[in-house]
Image (cartoon, rainbow, N blue to C red):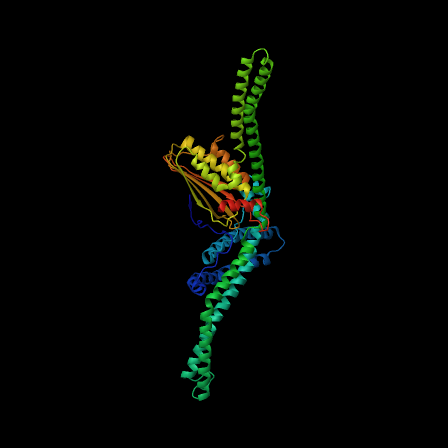
Amino acid sequence: MIQETPISAPTNPYASRPAQPGGYRRRWRELPRELGYVGLSAVLVVVVGGAASLFFDALGTADSSFAAILFVGVVVFSALWLARWFGTFEVVRLRWAIDRPVRPVDWTPNTHWGRSSSKLVRALSAVANPHYWLYLLYGVVVFPVVAGFTTFVLVAVVAGPVALVAVGVAVAAGVPEGVGLNVHTAVSSGLGLVAFFFGAVVLAGAALLLPFLTHGFVVMHHAIAAAMLGGFRSDQLAVELADREISRTAALSAEGTALRRLERDIHDGPQQRLVRLQMDLAAASRAVDADPEKSKALIEEARAQSREALEELRALSRGFAPPLLLDRGLLAALESLVDRAVIPTTLLNRVPAHVVVPADIERNAYFISSELVTNIGKHSGAATADVVLRTRTAPDGLGTLLELVVTDDGQGGAGLRDGHGLAGVQERLVGLGGFLDISSPTGGPTIVTVSIPLHPAPVPSDDPTPDDAGAARLAG
């Protein structure tokens, strides 16, 4: 077994990026991109502001006639769809400028009209979607105000000191009469020099702070857009609740299937042998006086039946948890598993020592590994196999995944089929909230990646908990 450092992992797609080294230099490196966003916003504020003025003018000039009401309805409906397009474009611009994605919006119609078979009715159902109205409010009110304020401040910060320097130069050097100053006096020259140096100092300060000021404005745009153009947290919670319900149902189904299989295995194996053992012992008891030789033979046969029943019970007990896993942890159990594999198998450990692996995750990871290694020996035709245990950050950035990667150089073609081993692995993973990735082209190699979410680490205490014991075993 080889101990290596953990692999890197992706960050949360809807969270801020982690801080990077070289803060001030980084602000200057990102300044052209952020100025490009602000500059395009200055152009868009003119276009959007003009469109917003036309929109409000159309609303203001409407009377109570049917034609006017119909006209207003068409204008509002068109504005809703244009606002959605503009808001989507703004989200893309922000992603380019600051690389902080906004939570996506579920545009699926959630009303009776939205589920209609008519395309026109489904399009009209947009008026019942609150996201369209938020996008419209952002486009006609919020964006013009925020972008106009940003443009005004940045222009004032740069143009004010430049104008002051220009005036100071003109006054100090002398200009034609008519500018309101007596340029031929020492007082005028002194005032010009003061204005020049003051403007130069302010301009230098503005230039030094420009990257931070621009970045702050871009962050402000992103915060407002994330609040108005992003998906609702309640929608995300509803999706998570539905996923939890699916996981719970799958877990119950997997548990029921496992119990039925265990019941069938016990009924078909040890139970039948124990019934036969009872019958043999009864016959031996009846023949012990009349025919001692026959009684002795029956007792020997009963002993053989008891040994076979014991072996079957031991084999079934491995379906619960092997003693090595309970005593020494996941790594020791996996080492024993690969040693018993039909084909040469290598175990590679990339789990850092500080990672806490709960006992239930250890147990499920072992059973999944056992299923995958057994499948390789039965179906792959491989000469060698590798088992890699590692960790990485979850795609949502809020947790850690325990990953099990099993690779073989066999014939490939593995996939999910009802009643087969990988389907059982998939069912178990759904109950755990994990997921399965299979890469098995024809001719191989086959790479099966299993990802299981780890529970939050327990708070350290004086008495070791079961999870702490699992972590100690894994670290060892």
